[in-house]
Image (tube, rainbow, N blue to C red; front, side, top):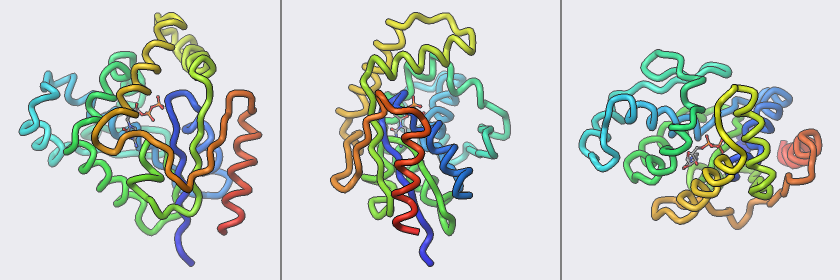
Length: 218
Ligand code: CDP
C-alpha cells in the first residue's frame, strides 16, 4: 500500500498546526511542521548576524546546520529552540528568509526526505503545490484575517508577550502579502486542493472534515 500524504496549506493563524497535530495523533501519522524549518533558519541567521543578501554564507549554513524535530520540540544544532522560533522577531523576518531560492530548495529536499516511507501530514504554504503535488489529500485552510489575528493574539497573551491586537493583524497581513507575492513558490491554492474556511468552524469541525477526506483514500 502506498504511503498517505496529507497536505495542509494556509496562512498564519488559519489553524493548520493545531489541526495537523490532532489528525496525526488520531491516524498515527507523522506530523511535519514545514514552517518551523523556515523559522529555525531565520533564527540562525538573526543570531549570527548574517545578512539575508549574503547568499554565499547562507548556502554554507544550509549545508552545515542541523535541524531536528522530536515530538513537539525543535532542535537547531542540538539546541532546543521550540520557544524561540515563535518569537515576534522571527515572525517579522521569516517571510523574507522564506523568499530566498536556495533556502526553499534546501528545505523542500529536507521535507521530502523526512517524509519518506511514512504516512505523513505536513502543514505549510507550498505542501500541495511544490513539496508533494501528488498528495492524496490536499486542504487549503483559510480564515478571515481578523479571526486569524485574534487567535494569534490570544497565543501571545498566553505567552505574556507584549503586543497589541493591531500589531498582530498588521504583521500577519504583511506576511500574507510577502508569502503570496514572492517569485519562488508563492503561497497559492493548488488547483486540486479543497478550500475550507475555518472562520466560523470549531477545531472538531475541521478535524472531522479532514478525517473524512483521509478515510476516502485509506
Ligand atoms: O504558523 P504560521 O502560519 O504563523 O507560520 P508557519 O507555518 O510557521 O510559517 C512561517 C513562515 O514560513 C510563513 O509565513 C512563510 O513565509 C514560511 N513558510 C513557507 O514559505 N513555506 C512553508 N511550506 C512553510 C512556511
